[in-house]
Length: 275
Image (cartoon, rainbow, N blue to C red; front, side):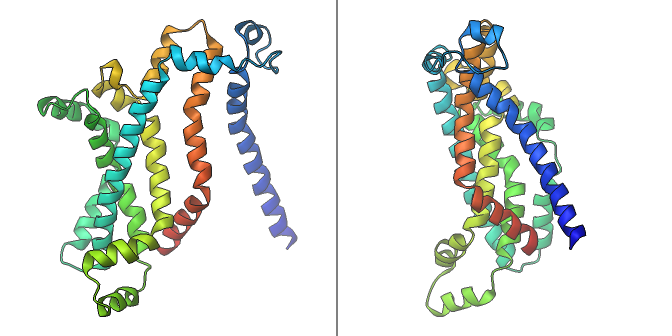
């Protein structure tokens, strides 16, 4: 018991240290976003003498964050809806039905997890140019969807396979059809796993930079990472405004994760055990 307690204490201590290491830069960024430029230059590690809330309104206007936020929301939500819908339907058939090529089909999706995403950037650029989708939201939504199908299907299949067959048999006895069973029974039961894949997709889509940099050139269609990069490159004099802009970009990620943290842990644990 003492050995077990000692191991837990060491593990918790290591996790606490890692948490502090990750939190410190975020806290410093947020605190710096409330400083004046003079205060930031003379006292970069201390608290602000006067809390400059106006930095946020100035950064929002100067960096045109409203446009970039809206574009990121469209791309992120569009890709998540398409990815989760297609993955849920595919996972349902792969996990609940037996057919000849089931193993091969599932293996094909798993192989997709091993492909480096950015290694396909040039072919995707050529394809998007030929079909006329460059400089459009679909130019990002479609690749984001394609590359996240594998991990999403992997998690959902592992979760759905644990459901007892009796549930579907009872629904069939009550006269429920195939899609009725999926939408009314299987999908609600898969909520923890759905929350997991939604968070994973949200974090990646919201932060993705390289595809957006290559496939989007119009300023009116640029996503938030591109807008922040341009703002940091042009407004090098205003460090505190950059900190404010980065803090505002971080708010949706932190808020979304905290709102679904419980479901994320439950979904990943269940998927790992049941898969």
